Image 1 (cartoon, one colour):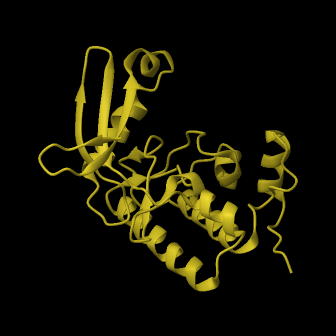
Image 2: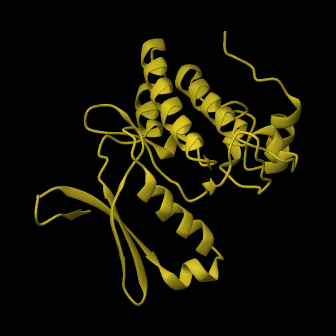
Amino acid sequence: MCKEKATGEILAMKILQKYVIVDKDNVSYTVTERRVLQLNCHPFLARLKYSFQTPDHLCLVMEYVKGGNLLFHLSSMGVFSEDRTRFYGAEITLGIQYLHNQGIIYRGISLEHLMLDQSGHIKITGFGLCKEGIFSRDRTRTFCGAPLYTAPEVVKGSDYGWAVDWWGVGVVMYAMMCRGLPFCSIYSEDLEALFELIVKEEVKYPS
């Protein structure tokens, strides 16, 4: 965390080591993350306030979201009510829809990336997997994303578009209502088994 001198506002600072970005071949992801953060002008997306660099580091200064992420809240509460789930789901949908309208596919949906601000509203974070220039008819095929939220078309190596984000939103909605993620009870670090379930099995809902 850091404090803006002029206003006293508490902000979050993400400090990235340049050599790590280069070594992990993450230059394009980092550049995209900064651009998307800078573009964000939506109440349910985290915003970039400033960015600067030193000879060894890239620093992104963002609004500080202090309400914790949805994983934290679900871990303590178990499940959310239908009204609360509907409320968060609507805000997540509006945030993702905003990105799509800007030609950005998100690909990073997870409970960890969905934060709550001090007023209890959603703030979507984690834009490192975004891809720009993807509109409704465009497709891409990079394999990426958190395994438990991965859409079937990504697993199969097919071309995909915005629908993978909506699959991720569906997984999050399931988690908020059903105490866990789809296939999570069967998943034990066996990615091959998990991906086979995602592609072949129907999602089961607790009775």
